Image 1 (cartoon, rainbow, N blue to C red):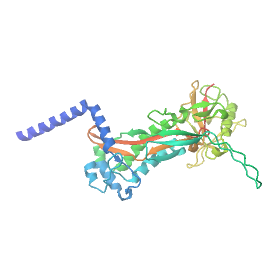
Image 2: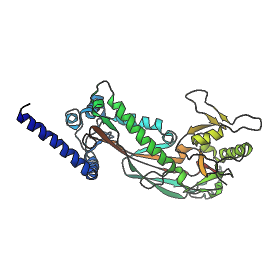
Image 3: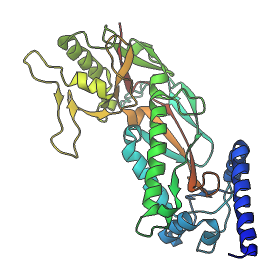
Image 4: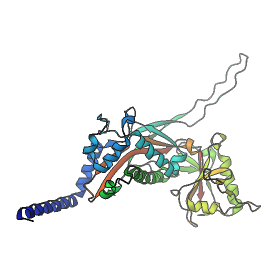
Length: 376
């Protein structure tokens, strides 16, 4: 190697060291710049009304492997949306959504709606309107009570995931990078949002159904309050007979309109306790699934396992079991569009993918969900 080559090599090494030092010293500013760039120019994965069918899956894979410059030369729609950027195939979004529904117990049982704004107002009847029969005579119709309408505002909140990949993985043509990225994004976001649908406090995240006030009787139920039942002992059932009566009371407290779609949802530790319960004849209350497509049953209703439900621990108060029609009771809101930004610089030698979506959630029917509290 001659002197000129040595000088060039030395200059390149020094430049790389300076770049690494700059990134390390200014990591916070770079992160803020990246978020700003993401909000202004990131790529929404879908847009209603766009010509998504014309996009090929190969284009998306090419973008993941090679970056934006090569991707722009493909068949992307150059129209900019509200957040700026370019639109990716609708099939990618559908795969992400289907994967998240599979991973999130709450998404599988709650009602999901997609909107194009930052919030939605749900109208709720706090008092059911009366009705009456009208005969053939000219008798005066008795005036019926009017419903009392209240409004529940459900905002959407930003949730993000930042999976990383080694460039060697992206360069390997034998690996389906599209499926890899969809899986990583879905797993990270589904885990985080499901916890919020159960326990979220409503501040910068959805409000979970366990974060509402509770009342002891059905007559006290009102907007913002759910009915709860108590075992009388912290962290466990008092005995099998009391447990059976309590669970039957919960089932019978649900109105017929909700009974058809009612389900149990509980933590793994609560399931362990329920599986040990037996009636006076020694028959287990819990009925195991007889096929992969059918859930286990408790008193004739499906059991959904959700590890985001509080752990049941003897001596500790918890609300580890809930029952009801969550499709009627809990509303999940998704904002249109799932965005992604490819960043090969910040986490060298890895390529970082910053994916973001907006989602919200809240209880909209307070008669549809019942809570079992393991406490005195």
